[in-house]
Amino acid sequence: MEEMMKDLEGKKVCVTGASGFVASWLVKSLLLSGYRVIGTVRDPDDENKVGHLRRLDGARERLELVQADLLKEGSFDDAVFGCHGVFHLASPVLGTPKSDLKVEILQPAIDGTLNVLRSCKRNPRLRRVVLTSSSSTVRIRADLGGAPLDESSWSSEELCEKLQIWYALSKTLAEKAAWRFCEENGMDLVTVMPSFVIGPSLPAALSSTASDVVGLLKGERERFEWHGRMGYVHIDDVALSQILVYETQRARGRYLCSSTVIDVDELVAILSSRYPSLPIPKTLHKHERPHYDLDVSKLRGLGITFRSIEQMFDDCVQSLTMQGLLSP
Ligand SMILES: NC(=O)c1ccc[n+]([C@@H]2O[C@H](COP(=O)([O-])OP(=O)(O)OC[C@H]3O[C@@H](n4cnc5c(N)ncnc54)[C@H](OP(=O)(O)O)[C@@H]3O)[C@@H](O)[C@H]2O)c1
Image (cartoon, rainbow, N blue to C red; front, top):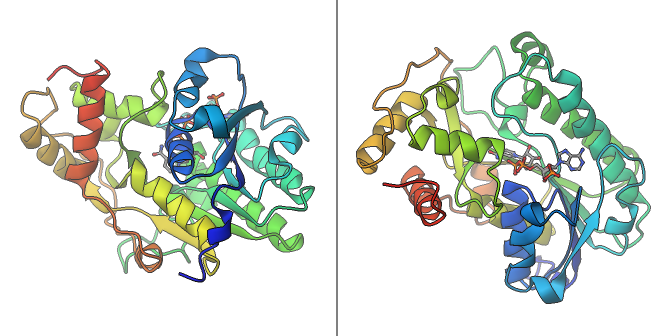
């Protein structure tokens, strides 16, 4: 316990891309843990995007929203200034591979990460940056099938290019650029690499991945079929992991964050029998993808226990139903 940065409680952290699906849940968890949070958003006056943040418990007293854009140099200076920690999540997220969007995804992910880090460097109070990377920086490889993949694995940039998986390429290049920058500038960086995040959605508009999940639960086949084999993780476990690696002084390097890796046909079999009133397809065409698993013992070693597929989808289905987005 003495290694935990306990004195950080109530102090100031910045969350970039605060209005997003994963970041909103992190902001909620940080506020519940007593932090003062500066959230960056592209448009703080867009009620549709930020209304849910302003309504969070503790937001009135301890949440400030600041305008910042990944593509503008120096844009994060004000937001980051005086913060002890920065959680960097802002990055373009698109579920399916899109051949025509390479630059639109790569540029904000890579240049934006470096912009945020340059702002962090100008802040003398900064202790640690936590970058939310992705398991897609680890698992896009031609040589899958052996031992479970751990944090020493990097996705093949060539394979990402060949398969036109620009999201995975953007996250891989952005994380590598972040490690280079922080090593050159003596900055404390820890990265968390969640697999596909499942859980309640706080933002009014569904993110790309959350709308893929709603699509599957409503019976659309094509939104998930391309997944093949995929890891899944509860959104609350992602937030807890991000806060844990920030607070734990001995946390170092990269952390895979995932509960269960499962083939998409197995997933729909579980979901269609668990929620019989939803029109979930009972089978899906399974694109042949090599078998792989993820070794998450490093994060477990810090104390995280991951919720099961059933628990993450129960929470997700329950909240979507309450929001009127599903009618079982
Ligand atoms: N969802 C998952 O399954 C998953 C898994 C692994 C890792 N992650 C990572 O988690 C992070 C959040 O993902 P998410 O699923 O929550 O996606 P999301 O809801 O689409 O959030 C992405 C955020 O990035 C912001 N953003 C995009 N382009 C920007 C720009 N040019 N300037 C400033 N902000 C910009 C968006 O702001 P606007 O609201 O203004 O558009 C949004 O807040 C990403 O880094 C993603 O790679 C997600």
